[in-house]
Length: 249
Image (cartoon, rainbow, N blue to C red; front, side):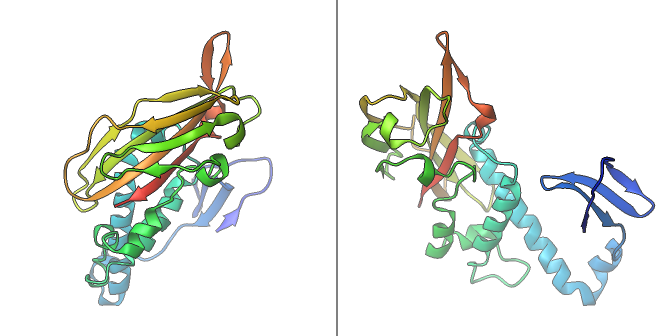
């Protein structure tokens, strides 16, 4: 794979070369490879078929997770989230110790302690990691989904964009079955605060406890705003916003 240089930016396929735009710039690759029929039927490609099947399941698991938190994800993600999440799901799948190669699955890998630990602490926006944005202790009640941040001072315990005047906190309690793709999500009301030295105690309580079987995920969202003439406007398409999986059960 090569990177295209110069002032002419091409996209599409020309004379056996495919030009496309990626987050790293305009790229070019050659067209070709083994036929689909041979990959499906040739015994020599058994390992390839196994990899393709697990690849497909990893992609689907990442999509399920993103779908389960859509309203929050739309406000806090980076351009490489899909590729980072695919790697995460692939790593979790590796902890499936009961399935044969080609059938290893995320829903089995995440049932292990090591699999859960990989998911816990995942940041959906790598440019605004929770540990670099929030400098205050918090607790998670896994029975109710409540995330508490006691004695919080936004002006001292947040890394804030220069133009931000307000910040909003919200939690999500998700029950996601990675095997079936079924999920239920409950959100807390938004807690909006001015970025000042006033002390507040935040209790982010989801509207209810999601039903179903699967993995229980607890997420914390932080969004920044700038107030102009009494109206709060989101900053820079969410580039400074944090969204983190703070607990997995």
